[in-house]
Image (cartoon, rainbow, N blue to C red; front, side):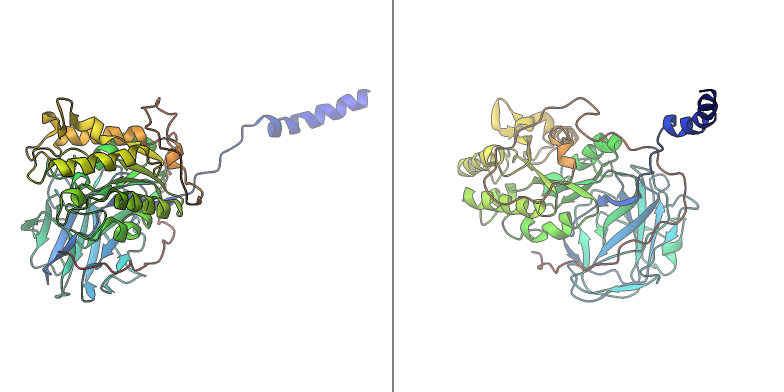
Length: 452
């Protein structure tokens, strides 16, 4: 017996550390997540010899970035002579000293992008915080034909008319002209511990018309603020004048769904807020069945990619010049489908959030910038809060593909306790600022129709 005791006395100290030491969690993998987006809305005259310093506002941060540039609406090969990225200093075109990086394409500083295509840079080892302004400077040495751009940026960017060698300038003195458009740049991904992204897919109400320029007060920006604690990116795929059923400003929602939403990095949920331009546009669309079929098609295509979908009810526009009682009836019937048709995984009832109880055909005066259609900053916040309440933990977990067919009506979700509806924040981001692993190769996007 004494021998047994002596053996245990030797073995137990060696075994106890393995039995009692806490398990060490494996570090979370660093994945690519969309942090900023804009959707191409048209093509403008080229700016040969100029450098455009685009200012974009990130939603989530990371240890490296990669940039998507587009010639999707161009008609000739686009030569990009230089592309750089940097953190923005203060409110002008100056870069934070020491942050400017040259972006490459399969190791080369220049690239030619075919018409109808996008290209993605190699990973750029630049740590960026959440809510940072990033400068994406694009130098085009020659006339490559119509330039793919986003018209309603609501953000001042900068031009160096003589742009040769200026993409590398930290000092913004050469950027003597301004523009309210984004040229060529359509997306920024970050590599880090973000939990994925949400795409806001819509028209001018999502694009931000009516909100304060240079303030990032569009409702997707407000939503990004509310999701920042969860490290969830928000991508704004709104195009002013866009339509659900047919091309308008930019390709129709059905035509651009893949390039502007489903193909973006780390997408977990799609928020669809589109259809009012079909109701009030020319030719108007009064067949509610067509809207229902289009929404079901959007949802089915998203579900096939494991992406869940939130439907947003169409908001009032009484008092706007194109309003009629007949069109109001169409809006009400489309909203009835969004609420109860069972197509969506969840519903954000923006109509209920912004309408005037005294006249439900109009938005509340407190949310009206004066045109009776769009939202001011307060209205944008109301929409963001409504969408935020629809985003549950389940909606941000990739969905398994599901068969088509009737589904139960989506439920409007009330605001849940913090920390229970969405994934909690990941652990601290890695401190290493070393180079990121190689990113995915560039992949051309499908050609899009010419815009009106």
